[in-house]
Length: 280
Image (cartoon, rainbow, N blue to C red; front, top):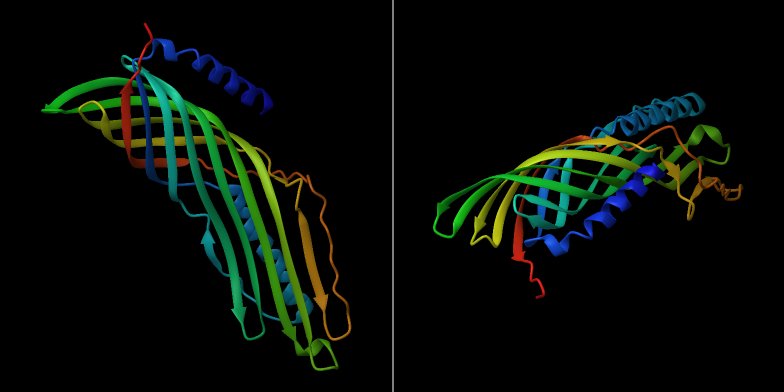
């Protein structure tokens, strides 16, 4: 992964030498809809809660049934780009932001159990587009089409929260015992992605465009690890007489799991183009 990131920055430095030959500065923003695979996270959430429910039911003589209320659905993503155009070729930087999460939750008169996992991804990549079609459709308006590809790292941040609060009057002769667990910790990881795409641009005076884009992101997930700072698990076990217990986790723990953002991307946005002013 480190070698891939080094290669990315080498390509970025090479791209910085292009402005003297460019014809246009281009930039824009799009809002889109994405699907995410997130297979590891879905399995982690489901299996983790199944194990917790089994332990709770065995130890407290209860009959909890877990319920999945969110399962890492697709959602909106943000896309911004800044580049340089040379005739039919375009190259530049692209930034994407996406987020998703999962939840298992159950609550009734005897207590509550909730497990949340939320991930966000910040993708910073290089992109290339080949504009293979440009057709005038009216005065001051034209239609262009392109095919392209983008690649780069995705910097992931995750939050995992587990909350359990149970009242069981069978556990204490003093009228009841409260068992409460509240764990919270952070994850991070770095992925590498490749996204081919195609798109249409409706231009007004070759300056402002309406952009429609479709693509598929192929993600190579890196292993998640607990964050190096502010990583702590807090467990409360208390009744009328027992003190609060706090347990800290070890930061930097690595898991053989990854946040996989692979999936279809569809977006609509606005773009701008301005000629490069060259000094004489």
